[in-house]
Image (cartoon, rainbow, N blue to C red; front, side, top):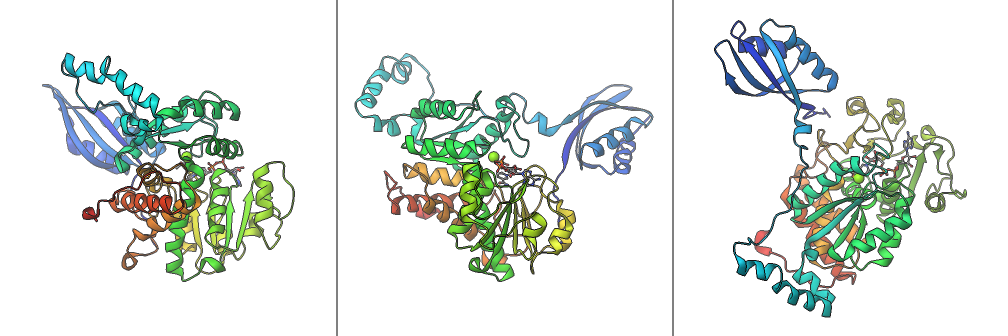
Length: 475
Ligand SMILES: NC(=O)C1=CN([C@@H]2O[C@H](COP(=O)(O)OP(=O)(O)OC[C@H]3O[C@@H](n4cnc5c(N)ncnc54)[C@H](O)[C@@H]3O)[C@@H](O)[C@H]2O)C=CC1
Ligand SMILES: CC(=O)C(=O)O
Ligand SMILES: [Mg+2]
C-alpha cells in the first residue's frame, strides 16, 4: 500500500522581478528548493520590473522558509510578501447570513417586519410548534463549543475555537443545506453551559456540541438531551464513532474478519474514545481494551472519572493491565483518538495479521502515515490530505439533515447505527480496497444516504414528529 499525501501548505508569494532577472530564474529558485508552482499571475508591469503572484505548494513551514530563502538569494528577485492561503480564506470569517426574501419597498417591509410580522408572532405564541413552519427553526443547528478540546489543540479558549465552529457551519450548509451557527461560550462551567444552551434553544432545530473536553462533555450532553425536545449530539463522540464504524465495516470486508471475533484497542478514553467503544460494542465487538495516559483502563477497578468507571465495567474482558505495549499485542484493530506519536512501529509489528490502524488524532495522528504504511494492511487518519479520512464531517451534515427532516426529538442509537451502515454503503463493493474504505466527503451520495437512513430510523424508533418525503427521482 503506497500512501500519497495530496497537499501541504499553499502559499502566494508576491515577487518583484527586475528586468535583469527572468521568470525562469524564479521557477528554478522555487524548483531547487523543492516547491511546486501551481499558478502565476501578473499584478503590475513597470518599466524596470514586474510584480507577480506565484502560488506554490510546500510541505510544511520549514519548507516554506527554504523556498523563500532560495528566491531571496537570487539577484533581481525581491520577495515582497508571503501569504498563506489558509489564513487568506479566514480573513473576515468564513460565513455570513443572507435574507431569503428581498425587502424592496414599504409593502415588503410591512410584511417581513412590523406590523405584519406581529400576526405571525401571535400564531406561534398560540401554537409554539408553528415555529418549525414559520421560522428558521426547522433548518437550524447551533454548533456550541466552550473551546476546551479544540481538534487536538486542547483548551485554547472560545475565540480560538471560532474558526473550527465556522468551518463546521460551512460544511453543514454546503453538504446538507443546514443553516448552522457557531456559538462559542465564555464559560467552562457545565451548569452554565447547560443553562445557556437551554436558553438559546428556541430558535434551533438541533444542537451540535463540539470540542468540549471530557468528562464534562458527557454530563453536558446527557443533561441537555434530558431537558430539550430537539436533537442534541456531541459530534466528537458520536460523529466520530459513526464514521469509525462505517470504516471498520468496510475494512473487515478486505481483511476477511468479523466484528464478533475482533480484539480492538482504543487509545484516548475521552469524548471520542468512549463513544467509539460504545458503538463497537453495539456492533458486536466482544473485546475492546481502553488505554489512556496512565495505561490500560483496568476491568472492575473504580475510577474517579464516572465515565472511566463505566468503562472499567464494560471493557477489557481479558482483564489486562499495563500499558499500550501490553494492550496492542495481538490486536486486530487500533483506534487512536489521543494525541501525536503514541504509536510506534514496534506496536504495529506486535498486532495480529492484517493490522487495521485508524490513527485519528487531529491535526497530527498517533503515528506518521509514512512510518506506519509498511506495517499495516489498512490505515486511516482524520486528515483530508491522506487516503481514508475518518472524519466526523462524513456524519454530522447528513445526521442533522435526516433529524431535521424528520423533526426528530432526539438522535438515538438506531439512528447512529443506520448512519454508519449508510456511509459504508457509499463505497461500492467492487471498488473497495485498502486505500478506499470510506467515501469521500465530496461524494454527494453520502448526505443523501445518511439523511434518509437517519430519518427512517427516527421514524422506526418513534422519535420523528414528521414523515419526510424522499425525492426518489434523485436516486
Ligand atoms: N478524526 C476525527 O473525526 C476526530 C478526531 N478527533 C481527535 O481525537 C483526539 C481526541 O479528541 P477528544 O476525544 O475530543 O478529546 P478528549 O480531550 O475528550 O480526550 C482525549 C483523551 O486522550 C487522552 N490522551 C491524550 N494523549 C494521550 C497519550 N499520549 N496517550 C494516551 N492517551 C492520551 C487524554 O488523556 C484524554 O482522555 C483529538 O486529537 C481530536 O482531534 C476527535 C474527534 C473526531
Ligand atoms: C474533527 C473534529 O471534530 C475534531 O478533531 O475535533
Ligand atoms: Mg471536534
